[in-house]
Length: 352
Image (cartoon, rainbow, N blue to C red):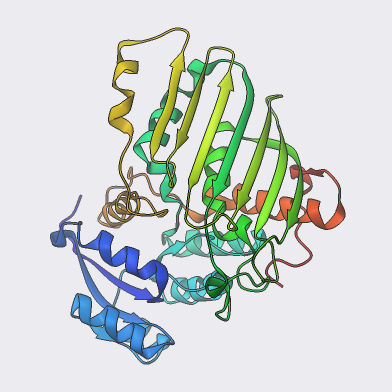
């Protein structure tokens, strides 16, 4: 690894940027330097800039040209991720984008090809893959043997004011609970249990007024023959209650919950090993649904750009299957049919 200090800029200084401020305060400053930020809301940009004592730019293009950044972190509304990431890559700047990498599968493929052509990193933040509990499950997954059933449950609370801005809950810029909140947990399900063969989904709006859905239930048919369910909502009241994944296999059962896939609730295997007694060490306390693993995402990206090519970065192309699953879920609800994932169908509404 070289001693290069990675220069980082931000676009988007809203809700998720507050979490990034918290996380960056826990990362060693010797490895990076924050050089600028931009948000269309000048006040938000200035608050973010003052926190890190950097320049707040009045224009995104000026920031790309002036701050000589190595990495742009994209924290803007989901519908803008494709255009902003493309602009950065065209300017020979590496990209770390909050989920989703883009709203459309073909956009992810296009930008992956562009990043490869320019030898740049195009990475996405699916931080829950790095949760200690999820990493332990991934490591021990084969011990469960033949999988019988699995479930993802998300019971979070978003009040109407959350959807009262210009983009949350809209088809063009966001989608509903599936693509905004549950995408992380759908990604973990596919990461651990996939690939998925087909699915059937029903969406509805129970309490919130938005274009897309606040509640969704799916039945999942995996390639390995097991069945699963996805039950997700932002209409839980009055707070976030649960974000969990449970797996039943012929040799045991594992359940990981908390509000951010952060706590191991059940860890049972018929054939035990000494390490099983230590499973509680892999649970952690978290302040909110973001969890704490953004730190690992960011550190891995910084190390990768400093020359450690074995760093565990999640490239955007690695999220392509998750994006296709999201579109399949929407397409199933739109057509009232079971959808074969291999057909690569896209929603009639998401991103349009």
